[in-house]
Image: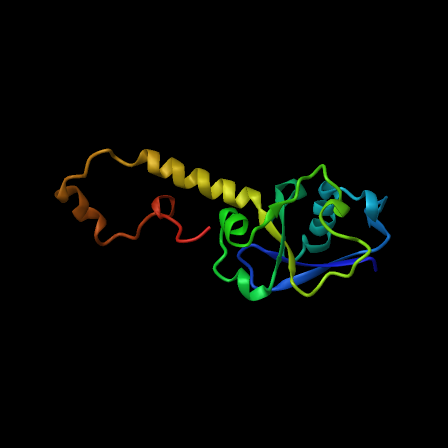
Length: 165
């Protein structure tokens, strides 16, 4: 093993290690770890975790990786990419870069969290839904009489605002 990185999915509470050797195999392709791009690293994480932590994600292109170096307890209260960037000093890992651009493959990393995996499709879909619902809202307050019919009904999912992302 050359490199073992502790990862966590944004919004999850359990970490998982991703271990890379001198050679990394994805499907029928073999890569040298020094020339392993972040785009390939996303595929590797997805292929390792698509049956469990990343079930429901059909394409590794929907993953965004953030490099951090923090203790696990610092992840509590982190819900958005802005939190990752501003509170954890996270750096978005660009797909065209290589693993050695972010990690020293010759040095063993500590026990901190090294990578936060974000489902970009989920965040984008939630953002779009919230914006669409905000645009649909009336510009004036409705008549009180028209609100009486809503008192005993459950609020439809499409107009509920999420408390977190």
